[in-house]
Length: 232
Image (tube, rainbow, N blue to C red; front, top):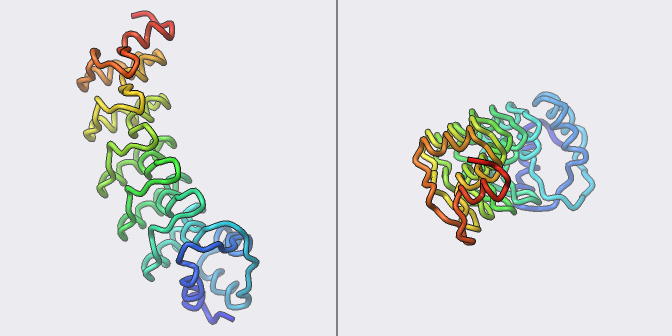
């Protein structure tokens, strides 16, 4: 039995390695209760069924926005950069679930913003998808790679493809490469042109996008606009 939260933490340190652990019970507590509740709950019961899911208490706390639990864990030297089954770190999980306070705590304690998940996405890619400019700003303030490539896209290309105009302009202001290429050598301008995104096209041109660039098919942004039925 556990005498309190310190014992709980010591118990979970054994699961800080990437192991298959249960969150069927622990997850309910982390989702619904605060630190005092955790102390009461885990002072009584310590046996959990094992299921085939790799997850840590920090992942669960981040996903559910329990910043007090996150703070306690990181201050007690919990490992910050372990992956779950999707190769996502607690920071990625916090970004994915738009838990900005948890993101801030993790970054302040040294979480790596440039780790990539199974699809090559970094935390910044996930912030762009949300979209969440304030979280993206936090990541960039802690040295996130603004031009990181997933399986083909930088955060800027992804923001363009998701039609997130404010995020696009934000990333460009922060220095994102307007000439970045995807796996087919398409630029952000080509992506915007293929969707007829006039506002995005204007923004990209203002930041120096080159209309003469060609992809692997030899097509320019103008070609993409014509192919997809958009006039000049």
